[in-house]
Length: 80
Image 1: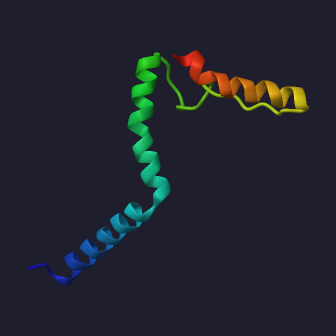
Image 2: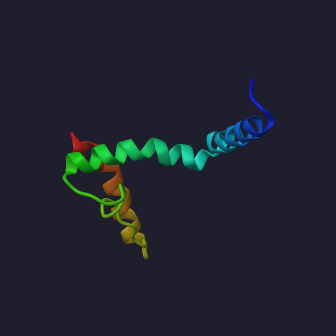
């Protein structure tokens, strides 16, 4: 049987674990960590998973929007 001090410490630890398990952000971070490590190993790079792999550009006119839409449309064909 646990004494009251041990029971209090156990309850405090359990509450901490419950809050961590309920935190979706922490869950996704933990899930993505192994994926990112594997991707970095395959690509022989280091750093954050999305760092340098994808860029964000402002589409300032209709021509740029059309070019971007064509790229997205044709990308699955290029990838095969």
